[in-house]
Length: 433
Image: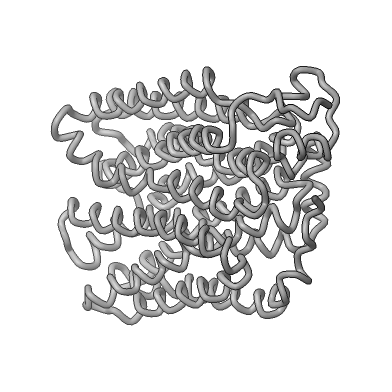
């Protein structure tokens, strides 16, 4: 292979396009959430059925992350991102048309809207495609920052839409608001098709050029090289026990992030009787702060190491959830608890994906698919567990529901102390030059 890199694009533009794809895909969940709120009263949904409907995008997104993340090693990220965004576009279009067709939906329409949620969730799976896409473009010493920028800025979608969407609906109506975002997703798909490039390894393979790892590093600066086989990547990642530890951590941190993004609007409205607009604003505050903390966590993990960030992050989540449990009618204590949980989840999300490419450098696609996919499944499971407290005790069950996070955070700290509390240089071999 020539020592002059003939691949197009560079790490920063690749990071920007990949982040845009994740932001656009994650917005599908943000736009489906308000639909769920509108369906609760006319369809007489119980807390459990509403939680299932609201979490349905998380179910699809988590399950699809595994195969799509692994397939990056075989096909590159661009084609997969376009496929997932196309499915998200279809889901949002069907959701909009279904709500227009049935403005007063009945219980018999539940499965229709559940199917719409399943399609919208395809956008969440863009995350596990983007992780290896970004990792293959950036050297390991910069991956904590690059992946945190990718994940943190992409995660801004729920918070931003929680703030912007209500005002937009008032200005141009429901159909106009959702049609506008459908247009934006379509534009994103076109832009990615025209300008996004996969990492040099995939470009060389597409051109039919021979690939030598050392020459690729010298010419293009690409340190990590995929196995080229999706199932091989999954099998190798699945055989490493650290993959499953990181999956559990991500189940709590990112699954928890998705769960609370869905949960907080109802919590603030029902338990503290604030207005719907105020509840949306508080939920947006949580979502935005968690996403920004993820970016800061990326810089911190590059500087101090992902392991050092893990323990403090889950301690913050446990403390915040405890505040929520004992807050009772103290809104200030609840806000403090929400802030601590936001800080802990943001930093933990960054720390986990700092460690994925360092622990599994030759199987990033498979590892990110497993960690991101099964981890995101927490966004489906956790709201259902929390809803059980409310179904059992009514509105008074809201504080007790946060005991789920106390238990999960305590379990994460125990796993950390048992398996990952060791010097970084022993746990993670230095990458060969």
